[in-house]
Image 1 (cartoon, one colour):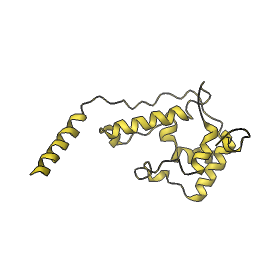
Image 2 (spheres, one colour; image 1 turned 180 degrees about the vertical axis):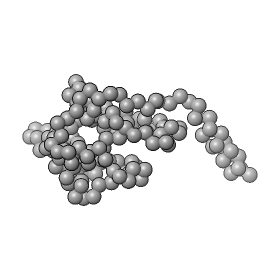
Image 3 (spheres, helix red, strand yellow; image 1 turned 90 degrees about the vertical axis):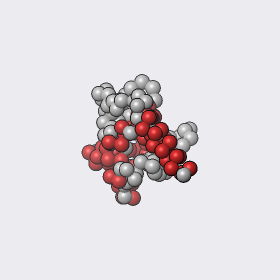
Image 4 (cartoon, helix red, strand yellow; image 1 turned 120 degrees about the vertical axis):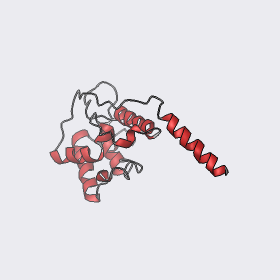
Length: 149
């Protein structure tokens, strides 16, 4: 009996939060682009990274369902604020020199992104290719003297 009431309450809450205005799924126009070292690096980046690190996010259907919509929008905002290839050359922070290290150490793409985006799971060879291409395109903070990784 108690479980039925709890489930009913959960359903009511989930239905109610759908009416809370969320963020709209904006893809602002690009204002700049990096000079990629190769089309292959650009292709691997687009496959594994661009949804959060460019203004070319593909918003899946479930990104319209709260509370997932809030989490996904937050992740995209954070990703774009740290590193956005669609706003290359913008004043402020654009940590291209950290991109290779993030892929190299397995931080990117994050584990929770991969189940819904299997195309972003790179083989070890593709990962090495992407790391090398990111280093050639953006540099490598880990390799720069006087900087801590």
